[in-house]
Image (cartoon, rainbow, N blue to C red; front, top):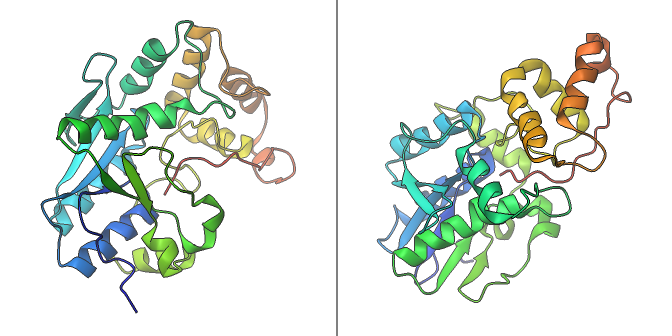
Length: 269
C-alpha cells in the first residue's frame, strides 16, 4: 500500500495554518520523505489577528523540525504580499485592515456569507508568492482529516490540484491530539480560541469567552465595525456582544444553553 504522505511529483505547496492538524500533517510528510525536495515549499499566511501562541507554534515547528517556513502577509500594494518572519510578523491586524481597504470600495466587511478574507489573506496571498517564484502549476496540500471528508473538494483554480494526505490516511482528531500529547512542544492558546482571535465564524459562546479573556484583542473587531459602519455577522455586533458580556455574571458561561454554541466553520487546522 502506497504511503499516503509520499510527496507527488512536481511543485508541492504545504500550507500550515498554525493549528495542530496542519502541524501534524507537516511532520508526517517530513517523516515519510526524509525531508523536503527543493520544489516543495511550506507557507504560513498571517492574517494579523493570529494569537501569539499560534505565531510561536509556527516558529517552533520550523526550528525544531529543521524546515523553512515562508511567513507571508497580504499587502494592498503590488505584488500584494510580503514575506516576513517571526520577529516582524504583524500582530495589530495590518494585513486584515489593508485587505478591507483595498478589496472593497465601501469597506465592506467579510461575513459568514462572503468569506473573502480567507481567499485574500491566505489563498491568494500564497498564490501570488508562488507565482512570483515562477511556479506555473503545483499540488496544494490541504490539512483536512479523515473524519471531516465533507470538506474535501477539487480545486477550482487550474493552476493547482488539491492533495489531502490526512484524509487519505484516515487520520482523526484523536490521532492528532495523541500525537501532540507526546511532543516536546504544543500550541499554547485558550481551548476553542482558534487561530484568528475574533473570527466571525466562531460561535457566540466562544466569542464571549474571548471577550472575557482577551478584551483588548477583541476590541479590534468592534473598532473595525465602527470604522466601516459594517457588520461581520448579520445577527450581532462585536460591541453589542461585549456590552452584553460586561453586564452579565460568569454564570452565563456555565449555562451551555444561554449563549449560542453553533459556529459557521472557522478556518482552522
